[in-house]
Image (cartoon, rainbow, N blue to C red; front, side, top):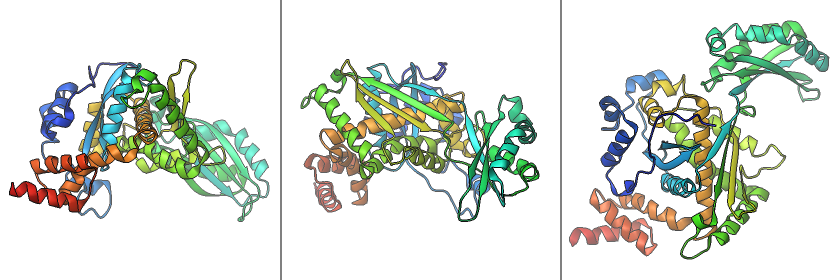
Length: 434
């Protein structure tokens, strides 16, 4: 559970959609208490200097920007958060904020997290006795752990380090038998890739000595199944009721929508994509590895033998909608782009979090909120109604609208439920001649 601390007093920032980007940012600056220098990062484009980018990846030619928004209304374990999200798709930020507002009135999100344990795999081939090799490695467990920890004294001093080993045997592969040793490493507040990879390489000679085999791959696993984050919500029928449908009806429809995703991989793929719509933008905004999170999530979705929903939705005895999400969540707040990208650092400042565990819990809360928004829309008015209304702004821009024209054209497109570039151009022509 997230440890309560001082931070945003109230994430309920009303009327943001009616403000300019500069006015919205000023509200966030005041709510979070940012300095003038921090506030200035969003005052103009190009917060990431090309010189900094050149040190982050290879063959740099420039930078590429995404829209950055903030999800509001989030109460998680009794604490309010304003959550930065970097994403190009319309409706995501609005949907997450709307669902958070509903959940907020029902007690907010409850989240928890396991220890930050990552796996490094050491593949051993050329073995005539893979099961014997397994027992030999396990018998030298303490020696292997000590060798791994010898290469990261700082991590050990912080309370982390290699905790244990596992050895998996694959006796019959096309290339012969092999054993794969896993180092189980507590990486503390790091994502941990560099740490566990270094440890795997450091122990490789010892593994060869003990087994008589040949070590090949030495690499982390992005299936972080020992590093889980969990979120739960309980929403009353009254909180979900609309002028057209009762809350009880909406809950039944949403549970049925979930059941479709649970049994059908074609539906589950889109269902889970919606969950990641909430998670990935925060991962990107904080400079974490969204590809690693995606990889781990989708393997997790198939862990029972078939691809299924990452969330569960049920109705309890009191008639409330209960939503849960559990996911591998290998995120960090130290190292990598989280400390080199100016806006990643600023995102962490906006969140005002103190650990990677806290960030992981915010991620799953966002994912659950986004999934709630999607299945609620699908089970009621359909996904396009709200999405296309927000997409209308993009269409207006494509048609050539600028400034105040964008909102005027988008409003007309949405009202007519005819969100097309051709229609936007016609509206723009009329607007400019009136």
